[in-house]
Image (cartoon, rainbow, N blue to C red):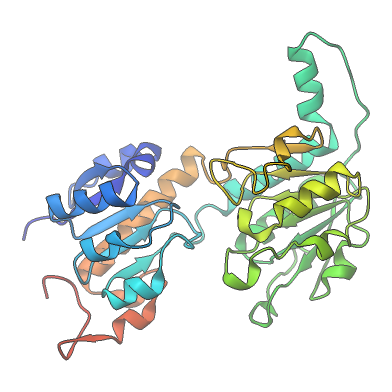
Length: 339
């Protein structure tokens, strides 16, 4: 049987080329990540599966991939994939959970440290030829409220607690997360207001689900104490960026350190509220999971899901839309394209 052809979007291929080039059981073709060009490449190469990044896909992609194919998200967040449309087209959607938590958690701590020691301000002054030291604070004994007690949130809590002696409070977002958290946290709670009231840092680790859009809105931002820094390495849509601009500009919180944004590359949601103009905002270009280690693991996990689909072992996949297995086409369950 010929090896399956897999299209890999160019940004994702460049992050782990050694994984793709060392997998002889598949034929790989790279393609631009824009939906029109990606869809055209799928049709041209008659590819059965796609490895893709975070870009939103809303139309042509679901018509280009053959029924039974895999949309393998290179990463954890999958808000860019329309699972309902994919299910209707008989496509298997997967992601790569559990392989990037260390990288994102480490970046979370880097942002907290940068805030604590005014890293961007003093570093920028040095580059400009100014000797302008500022007094920072130690992290030991400070309180870190972590909103979202999943794998990444727990990893951040572990590093903060065991490595820096911080007091970590886990904030659960749903009843389904009732048992989330463990020894990494000094306490867990459903009470957001109580958790952030005395926090020095508030870090977001919740997914971009519809119920989490602008979770950190004007009202919840108002509950943070003036000394608090907001850290967001989750998804930009979980924060009301216009409201965040206002509270930082008005010195109602100490600042914000962000790796993710509503619009990426970053464009302010309100032209008059550009976060880049505020000195107390640290901005990074969505690099949380972009380490050589996490990139390799994400590529390997994406290909593992495709191999499982080829083998018909759907139960072992990181399947985001298991209902696709129950849909029928012409009286038959959705199966591999060659079954």
